[in-house]
Length: 327
Image 1 (cartoon, rainbow, N blue to C red):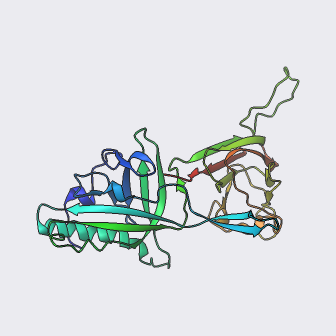
Image 2 (image 1 turned 30 degrees about the horizontal axis):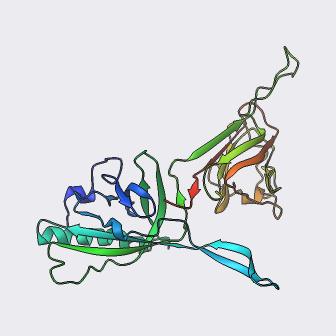
Image 3 (image 1 turned 60 degrees about the vertical axis):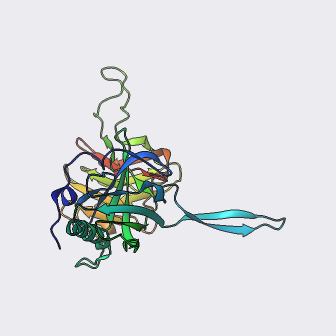
């Protein structure tokens, strides 16, 4: 791969993609692209040797949906199901150099940075790039992208010598934007004491039991749960939907016994996995087939965290990243 100037490959950490520019559908923002190697490309910094042609940007608004409808006997139709579809983002880039050689180096490096998302890893998977849109207030949203087409240049007379532009299409298997700041909800066993001694007491909202978890995003999220012992049986219930799942560390498929103080098990709801702290597979500890690894709807969710056999140190940590319709 040709060597390129430092401002292109390893740009200084400026905390964004340059000066905010007006982008269609979302207003003033900066943009960066992180390729599968972890290299960050500042897409709205015109001093980097390339920059975004904002007038041609599209696909940053609400996710596309495929609607399933049923015809009605008196005319019209009734919506039966709405299925979110993969998103396509069009992103025009103008690339330039002070010499032909510098321009070609930058052009090739950028093309490789985007098309690298299509290369197979040794395990047969592909690593997406990450497009991030940052607002002047410091907030940002990200989306995973794969290169689809468009890095061919304009093919017009005079282009391809010291400058050219490419209209790139990026394909997103998940159409929703994600807040990079993780939301963490912590609940633990409260101090065990007699209600009347030395005087009437009430429980903190941070203890295990019935509580409310708020999802500030636009769409459902699928959290990760980490349970810290001691506990003999773990049940999480979504009181709004009635869905629940139970993890039994005494299940015969596991053969572990009660979670002891400090021992941890982690449950991922998407994709569904259950792992003990040493990495061993505990999916057999779930109460199949009744187990429903439920998500959190937008807004407030009434839930119950129940740890049988809990004691000092028993805790639940729930983490998720809010998801949004638009950048």
